[in-house]
Amino acid sequence: MKLNKQIHQWLNSHRAEGIALLTQLVQTESTQGNEAQAQKIVLHELKKLGLEIDMWEPDGQRLKQHSFFASPRTNFSGSPNLVGVLKGSGGGRSIILNGHIDVVPSGELEQWEQAPFSAHINEGRLYGRGATDMKGGNVALILAMKALQALNIQLKGDVIFESVIEEESGGAGTLAAIVRGYKADAALIPEPTNMKIFPKQQGSMWFRLHIKGRSAHGGTRYQGVCAIEKSLLVLNHIKELEKKRNERITDILYHDIPIPVPINIGKIEGGEWPSSVADLVKVEGRMGVAPDEPLEVAKEEMKKWLVQLEKVDPWFIKHPVKLEWFGARWLPGAIDINHPLMTILARNYEEVIQKSPVIEASPWGTDGGLLSSVGETPTIVFGPGVTEKAHYPNEYIDLDRVFETAEIIALTLIDWCEEKEQL
Image (cartoon, rainbow, N blue to C red; front, side, top):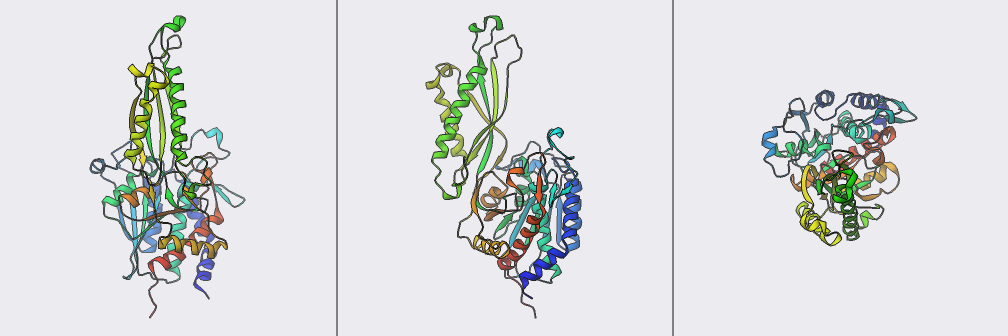
C-alpha cells in the first residue's frame, strides 16, 4: 500500500482520538496568564511520542532587552513555553512546527450561542474559543507526527514542535524559543488560513494618538475647541494615508484582499464631563505593515503624515497630534514563492485535496515574522482554521479540515526532512 494511503487510513482510524484531544484543549481556557493547563495536555501528548522535551517559563527581564520584544507583561510565571524535538537520524533538513497555545478572551457572552469553552460539536464543526485560532492547527501538527511514528517512518531531519505562549500579544513566546536557540531550515505555522498557503504576511504595530482641544463650559462651547471634533479630522486624514499606502501594493498575492495593510482604529476615549468641551481625545489603533516594509519606515510615514494635518486645519500648527507606539507588534515576513518548501507543500496539498491550493498573502500578522526575520528560518503559514471566525463569537473549525491538514503536513515532513531508508 502506498505511503500516502497508509497515512490517510491511520488518520481516519484515529479520528475520534484527534477530536478528543482538540475537545480537551478547547475546553481548557488558555487566555494570557492561564496557559499552563493547556500546555500540560500538550506535554502529555509529546511524552507519548517520545520527543525530547524542553518546557520553561520565559525570562521576561531578559526578553525585555531584545529589540523585538513586545508584551504587556514581563512576568511569565505560570505561562510556560513548550518545545518537543523529534530527532532525525541525520542528513535531512530540519523544520519547526510552530503553534500558539494562547487564545484571546471570549468577549461578550451574549453573542455566543453556546458557552465559549464548551467545545460542542454540531454538523462536523467543533465550536469554542481557540478552536480555529489555533488549537485545531496545533492538533493537526500532533496528529501528523503521530501518524509518522505509528507507521514507523523515521525522518533524517529534526522536527521541532513548538507550543508557544503570547502570540496574541506580540510573539514573546516564539521570541523566547528563538533566543533559547531553536532554529531550523524552514518553519510551518498552521494559523487559520482556510487551507490557503500564505508565503507572505503583513506585520502590524499598535499606536496611540493624543489630540488636543481647549476646554470651556458647555453652555459657551464656542469659546472652547472640541478635541472630539478635531479627532474626526484626524481620523479622516489617517484614512487617506491608508488609501495611499495600499495603492502602492501591486503584489498579485494581495489581489483578492480588499485592504492589504489596513490602519484600524480600535479605541477612542475623550472628554471628562458632559457639560465641558473636551480638551483631549486619545485614539488607539493598529497599523498594517507590508511584508517587505521595515517597521521603522512605516512609523516614519505615519509621523510625517500627521504633520501634514497643519494643512487641514491651522489648529494643528500650535497643537500637533502626539504619536506614540505601544504594546503589541508583529514583524512582517515573506518566503520566496519558489522556495522548496512551498513546492513540496503545494504538491502534497494537491495530492490530498485533489485540486491546486490557493496561494495568497496573509491579511494579518503571525509569529512567522519573528521566525523568518529574527530566527532566520523561512516560514510558511498554512492551516485548517476558518480565517473569518478567528476572534469572533461562535468561533468554530471544520473537523475534516483538521485531518486533511494533518495528512498534508505528514507528507510534507517526509518530503522535506526525508525518510530514512529501511534496512
